[in-house]
Amino acid sequence: MRVRQGNHRDWPFMYRLGKINIPDSASPWREQPMEETLKYRETVLKGFWTWIQQTGSIVFIAEASEEERSGGASTDSGKEQSIGYLVLHPSSREELTGVLQGWVMDFGVLPEWRGKGIGKELLKAAEDYCRQHEVSYLGLAVSSHNLTALRLYEKAGFAEERKIMVKPLK
Image (cartoon, rainbow, N blue to C red):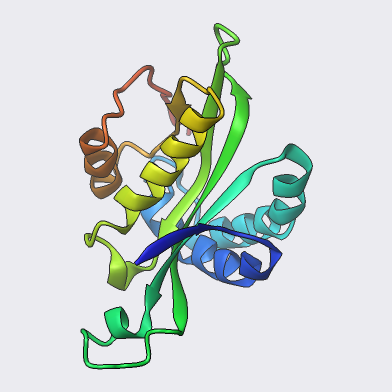
């Protein structure tokens, strides 16, 4: 497995995976049919690559070789398949202090590759990029019910800084 910087050719993969990840990320507090949530997310994703380019954001792509995908049985390791991505906005400002920080805008790993260290490597790539560019903090947001993601982030050294709360008014 390797992580490389992404480009516009990776967009179809990111778009597909971005839609797959919604059920894991959508808050159970929001009583909206998943069909409507997916439709909204698709609309957002359609403009996401333009936003990435306009903001100078960086895309990291995790790839697995054919050998890794087949459990070592193949001898042709030249064909790489995208298995995850992370979008880093490297010049975000923390909303209360204005301190420069990197911000993980979007992050996803194919379901069959989760739990195999792919997320850890993508986070490491984002951290390394921030360190190289003298960005002292890396932030992200995660749904509180997404326990798998929370464990990944905690193991990677992220700490809870504030909470976003919601109250249904129906």
